[in-house]
Image (cartoon, rainbow, N blue to C red):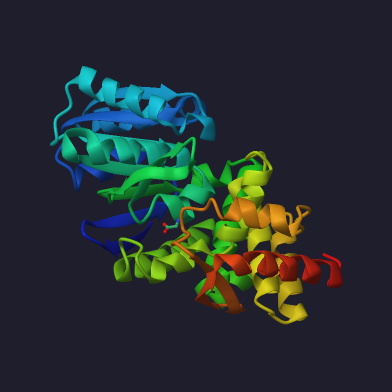
Length: 354
Ligand code: GLY
């Protein structure tokens, strides 16, 4: 088992290894004295792992209950949040009890937010069951729900007490879910880790998924330690997100987050004027991992969609631009220049015949 220590306002470990789902209660009991715990999950994950996690927590001495909501991004809203809070209240949870977020990014974000606001903040443990949640959203304490006016617009920074990633669960994921998470792993490679990028561009890395997750988490740990509340360099983690967010939005969210981030990274590299060979290398790596690399929307529509991004600060927007594989920079640009950045990205896509 690998252990990565996160040094944020709350310190915690991220545990990565085989068979951890069935030890999740025992592992949690080492950092949280057994108490009442509500396992929050979605109906898909509940059917796969709900019983095993509940048995593990019960066996470790926790008093347990489960709450499952319908799977999917459409559930990440105030209505589901209210249902979770009511389930917590009905169970009689107090601040010294525990929430266990068992699932992908939607579950982690909404259960984490419920833990952040119930009794003004209670402890929670993340058990990510998707690659995307394992390499990104389960670490760093961002919790939120979507609002009609934007994704993740209402939330809180609230760090978990422990993150438990079972690599057997990740190996069992369907290909679409794996590629969705692989995009965020490629992102870490482009941002900081050429060796990780090389591992991912080789394709068959599933038997080394523990290393992939550990490298991503170690990088994220360092970024979060330097900028927990996202006022500076944490923005680097948004590589591919401004361009990708626009694609997600224009697709009516039928394009998955990871797929959009993949295309968004290619667009960011193209708009930044990176050499064609590097853009091709990035595109090949994404394709090898089952991800699309082409954008078929036009620049004005993309710019309009991107401007509804909450990361926009007034008249400027911060773009994350690749410099080379393993290094990126932040660039604040006036929003009026955004259409030209999209034009450049689309022109490079045609020139390189992506
Ligand atoms: N997922 C980006 C961040 O945690 O800041």
